[in-house]
Image (cartoon, rainbow, N blue to C red; front, side):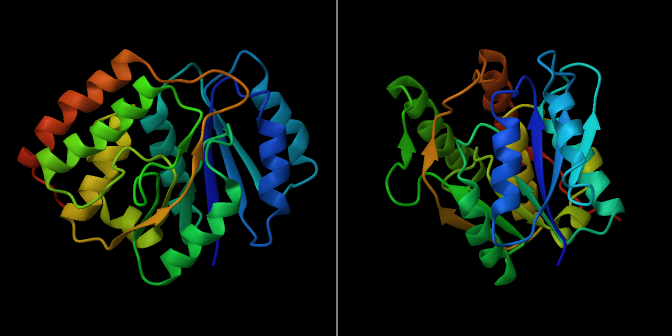
Length: 239
């Protein structure tokens, strides 16, 4: 099985090299695709240098300018489908997601699940070092998504996710509209509406130690209002 980890980056020079080392130290063999949005701090240059060490496993897509989380993942998904990967993993570069948990998500996918979510909210609240304001916003955002959409997912905004090839081939990626954290909600909702099998795996989320958070009011607003439209959207599988 070919397994690809996708990491979107913007100004992650403090984290990217350590993340590359960590991913390639794991017992399970993963490939890694970094999709960089023109980081002025030289993140992509670090990846290029490290490609000499891992020429078959480390890949890079460079884009001009900060184009957003959703479009980065959609570009990566299409790239991966063209190259016949079996499983795609979303992972943040800042170590807020523990790469050691990748094997747990993969094991759950092998049980026949189409979408596996690394969830912060299965067993209480598993978040470390977040200010209370952000924690409450995230927790109640997922409650809000469940209320509006009826989707049985406890961590709808989670960004630590495994998609099977089947899921990504079934979802019409051209119809995904949201770009910020709303993208994460829309992808899960679309998969659920299309009858994909979804499982949540409990993880501990730890706030980044290096670099700056990409959260903004605009990102939150897009997700808040975008969720209202989801139940009225016509969801079709890709032909």
